[in-house]
Length: 307
Image (cartoon, rainbow, N blue to C red):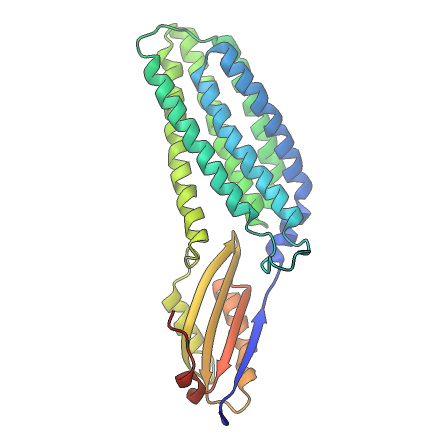
């Protein structure tokens, strides 16, 4: 098919991965602190008979998984694949771990709801002193975690996600302290149950939100905040691009947006449009990895997939 031609180009970067790497030790220390406190809080909650402590411990279990995923992802994401089959590397480990965290959070929410209903007819006063002590310790641990992650939250999406998880844990610790004070002052166990249900509801809402994000990534949806029609229009405005088709946008993991597209041109040197098109995608839409195929008008008419 003489007179037809095409070119391929791609651009990519590892800004997010390297930023996470610079703050890896902060993630590691935060993970160790929260993992250790999770065990303390769970044991204390069971021994004190406090649903508020148990629900907060369940929330922290999910956060341990999330923090661990961020830490593991920063270590293995750029590690070479010895099998040759994982062509995108192991970046999606973070997404799968987030899915596991969603299941843990939903399980905790259901358990707390069932246990709260079972306690409706019983009068069991939890040990408010233990609740107060553990809640205060949890607040201290979370504040330390926030201080560790704060500086990296503005540079890496992985660190930012971990920072928000610890912030949510901080609210849970405050809830436990409030429940302990109210149980101590009133002698009523309903404050413990009420705060536990509030934490469980909060965790369930967060699980639903995170679950929606995980499904969007696994379902190859366009990244949040990026409209495919706007991307197509911007590509069509690149000099000497006459048409854009087969545009696909998706997210490999948080902060790693990917695009593929066919660009039709009548330019004599077809690859001249690759650099400005890739630069535009990177600067305007934060798409650091774009694979672009350049075609002549005639070739665009005779090639194309049905999907």
